[in-house]
Image (cartoon, rainbow, N blue to C red):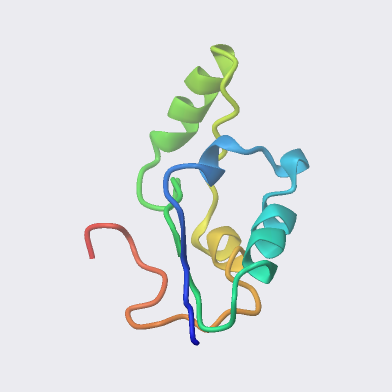
Length: 93
């Protein structure tokens, strides 16, 4: 019997600082999935909004470790995985 799972990590990893090892966490979670499963992930970025850096600073002042990552940094979360169409895109696309 074939079983696929979709791991949905929506609006989580931009709240995990680099020292929380976001890449290692994703890798451990994905490694536990059966073959043929999917990863869905959303992540805040400063690539398109220069105000995101100020927003991150405001979050940190309130004790929340907001860490917007670049497109390349988010793409690394999918290392070793085959992206399906349309790949890694902004949410409204």
